[in-house]
Image 1 (cartoon, rainbow, N blue to C red):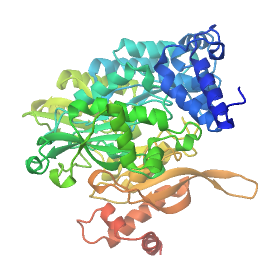
Image 2 (cartoon, one colour):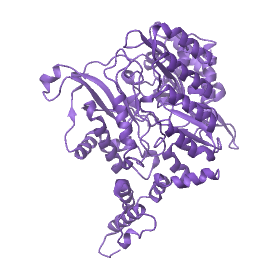
Image 3 (tube, rainbow, N blue to C red):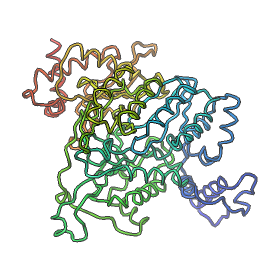
Image 4 (cartoon, one colour):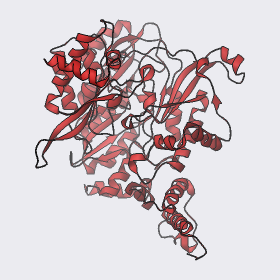
Length: 591
């Protein structure tokens, strides 16, 4: 480097050269030797990496792995590992997540495969096909996730290629469903069948889904990124927990007089930066988006994030932290620079109230917007289905419904398009495979991540404890109002414990001076979403797993004993008391 350059300039140039070298074709001379870089689909990300290094910062390990070899350039090595049934080393374990494959040792010496299902909908043929693949290459079961998606577990390394390619044979894919990518696109579970929705989110979720799949420059972003479309249907999509939330709203006729440039009708309200594991819900931007421009605007938002997102500290490599540093207005200005136009501002007073959502609408029989047709929300025990159950549900959807199965963010599914005359037979079909359409108010709102039986990050057995809580409460209490209980195994909050009425986040609890620990949970209360959005407050720390069912029981007994009348919900009860008062009320129950 020339002595004419400052130390900061030298660092920048060194980082830039390293980024260009990472782009060059195998065997080509290094950029420092005058060679051109590979086609620049990855250029924005590599330039961002180089900028951080020029500032004297150290890239995180995943950033280095992405620069050394883009995962989509390594498929041949994945195939070789499948041939030899080999376990991946950490860099490849990260890279294979770009194909939806997660090696989950030490909890299981196998892979988990996560799909991509835009708006959470697949047809009966695809659903039965996934069941067959789970049986052929996995453990014979699948989980519905909190992003209205499917995961298959217990896949041996030798079956990875067969699994990924067979998924594609079904007209589905797993590409980009893990690691530093834009995750599964969620949408309104009742899209196109709702009695109250403002618009059908399916075409917009689908457009964004295919936009992602076909643009490599949108892969390998600073950290994972979530996008959701809520159309105002009966079932909440939890769009305010996403990095981008598109929330359907009705612009009133009065808007035309106040802002002539705004046409009355249905728009999306733009929300940014939701990440409940970091105690943040989506922020209001004052921006409304026509549905037809949602993909273009989402693309611009992601490109600003690619440029500005942290590539040194994984804990802060999310959109929230760019917004924290810049503020919403500066970020929106950067998005407008990418778009080369101004976005549409609209005062909230010009928006009509949104349709009220039903916290129980994902369970049971409900009439659709189409006369004489119904959907049935099927209860899946903490999101789990066997292959046999999946085939039975697929057959019911094919024979009695419109052929679609709709996954929800509540870890269950809907069978839609069932004629009223066929509802009883559909119920019987669901029961015949060991499932149900009915659930208690506790079990209907019970959400749990994979936990430490299948995720190396989790500290506690979330699904096991959740099942014990539900059984314990059902045997002792009758709760008429919906109660959402969310259990997550680590601070990543896949089950979004901070938006539950009661949230439990896994921890290890010391039990002696020798460093021994047992499984447990911290307990938060009073979370919510949508019109009742709030981040839960911590009520207790370090509750042993074995004590969680009784702890939840005491909390619910305090609610039943001290609520302001039978109409008061648990959420309202919690919010009118501070933490110390709640602890005292529960203490009275103990006595």
